[in-house]
Image 1 (cartoon, rainbow, N blue to C red):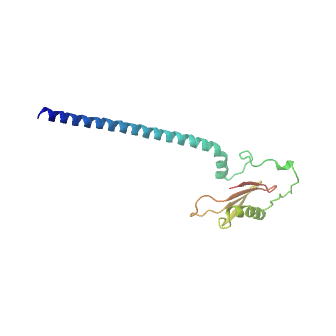
Image 2: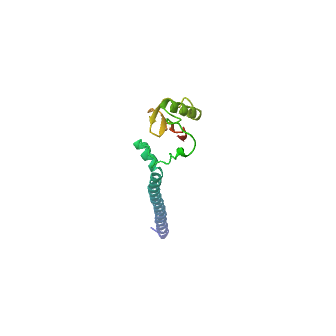
Image 3: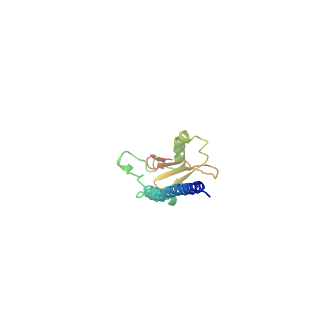
Amino acid sequence: MNSKELNAQYEKSNNQENKMKSQSKYEVIILVIFIAGVLTGITGYLLHTKIVKRAVSPVVDFIEKEEITTGKTGLFDNPDSLGYYLDSGFVPNAKVAYQVAMNILYPIYGYSRIVKEKQLMDKQVWIITGFKDSLSKGGVVELYLRRKDGKVILVA
């Protein structure tokens, strides 16, 4: 081998080393970005779950336990301070609660979405909720009526 061939071979191996070094730099950069993304995702998930849990905890307790307590929800202000109220309330039974709810829900959701409703009663609130079959996407309609004065507390 002459010196030109040796020089060419040396340059070729030198170029290969430089390519490998630059390639390893990119691999390190990609790895650092990946790890930073994973750490950001984990941190975001942990913070999100804490924030959501704190924000909706009373609502989740209420829904899962199917309880209505004046201490846990802010829904029941004191309606006795104003006006006149019937002893049985303006929404005295399930039939009236159903009729009021349908008059509110039909224009919002349409008749086809409200297939079947059931009434659940608490001493203070009527809860009218739609029926969910296994094929439907999303949740069901809900309407909460205060029994005493007929005030609509929630439409969802």
